Amino acid sequence: MDGKHMQIGEVAARTELSLRTIRHYEETGLVVPSARSQGGFRLYTEADVARLMVIRRMKPLGFTLDQMRDLLEATDRLDSRAELPVGEREELLDRVRDYRETARQRVAALRTQLARAEEFAATLDECLTSARRP
Image 1 (cartoon, rainbow, N blue to C red):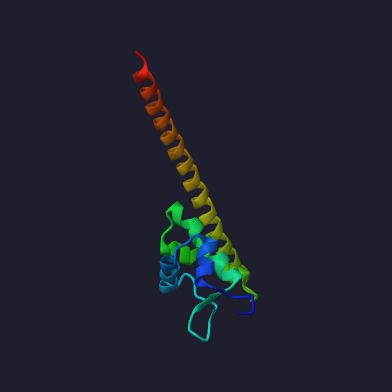
Image 2: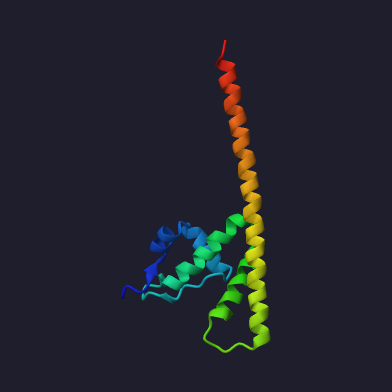
């Protein structure tokens, strides 16, 4: 191998995703290996790893596969070397901004949920501490 491509096992280790999950994302069209080895093994690039990391980061925020696909398509178009008409560029930027706002809202909701869970755990600690007293 020329060092530019990685096999799926290395990608799994770097992204902390299972082989099965990476294959699932391939089957759904979210990520496509950049190449195949002579033996037919999937080969990935740094760009493929970056794409998988976007997917991995969206998952805990509850984004659907369709939403992941939509965001990736928008960012792919924005990152492409092709000239985009101003209207299309603005529409793509608006889509990315919408995802950013949704992500921020979901992160805030998760922080609230975590704070409530920590309060509950502290309540249980207090309960156990007070139960030990004679």
